[in-house]
Amino acid sequence: MRRSLIGLVLTMLPALPAAGQEVTSFTLENGLQAVVIENHRAPVAVHMLWYRVGAADEPPGKSGIAHFLEHLMFKGTDERAAGEFSQLVELNGGSDNAFTSWDYTSYFQRVAADRLELMMELEADRMRDLQMTEDDVLTERDVILEERNQRIENDPGALFMEQRRAAQYLNHPYGIPIIGWRHEAAALTQDDALDFYRRYYAPNNAVLIVAGDVDPEEVRALAETYYGPLRPTGGLAERVRPSEPPQLAERRVPFSDPRVAQPYVTRSYLAPERDPGAQEKAASLTYLAEILGGSGATSVLGRKLQFESQVAIYTAAFYDGTSFDDGGFGLAVVPAEGVSLAEAEAAMDKAVAEFLEEGIDDAQFERIRFQIHAAEIYAEDDIQGLARRYGEALTTGLTLADIEAWPAVLDAVTKEEVMAAAAETFDRRRAVTGWLTGTAGGEVMQ
Image (cartoon, one colour):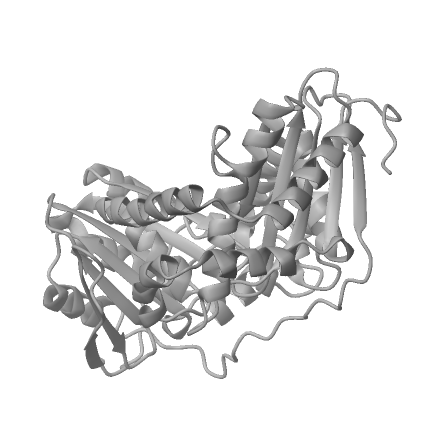
């Protein structure tokens, strides 16, 4: 493996511990950030390597390249044959996989704690020394095109979502599908993959998360040995992405496909993400999603539409603030039999208007607060989920202090803050409303 003689660890900084966890951070001289989350309940370790690059960072016209490279990373290096990485993980009793988002790409292994060193050796090997042949590229390109066929082209709901995101983001690359537009993904080349890999797959663009039955000093020593000598990418600039212009009018997306068995209506709004040092608005939106659509039996939409008026068989509200740029807040209603999408949308609008007028019931608010607090505690028992939480946050611009402060920020949310967030979010001029139906021309969007 080609490695430069980079110095080793500069600092080892203790982070504020999560409840029941010991969290330690250190940074290598080559820029690799590392976080160790101790959990000694079982002799298991999770090794995750996150890159601060995803589908929203792709060059114009090269959509799908981040996901394509994720596939190619399981090919060989000059030390390992193609496919040997996963075979070695499996032979050592572990499991491995990877995933790509708009903001990051992550590779992970779950193994017995005494196999951690091998995982670091393997992952460091392919960080800077991936080898791929033209045949590898052509074969894997066919794989991702077939994956797109299965996950997108053959799923009308996925096609509908793809069209709605494109309508939501006119200028920002969040409107481009992670798997890529088919015509662009079909044209990706070996040079495209290698250019992307050499620029972004570097220690100064990566975050290492190790969680489980591990010792921070031992993890640091292993990181020094395997990741420390890797050369960084010079001149890697901070992320700067195109921003959205102000949305001045509601956008509507009617989508029909004869394969649709259950029509539904959905509406989404641009909404702020968790910002470093300013997570309060995102916390309020987290509450708002739970209050409006968290439970069919007790949520606002569920109670009003599923039980009182019985115009819907399913309702939901959703928000995820872990993104680098503005994300979205959404509502969805699946109408009951005999109820048109127009009637379902009108009922959804009426329920939201009544909520803005009536406010939040005290008992419901405290119940939601307890549920959110309990979910934060339960999350500590899942070391892989905890490692993912840290990786997602750190690759979307948050800091360790933000991660550790998040439960307290959630606990401090007030009803007034939630209602203020609702009033700001529910502006129809900034909405994208979509109808998914199975019969073309069966209903006309208003």
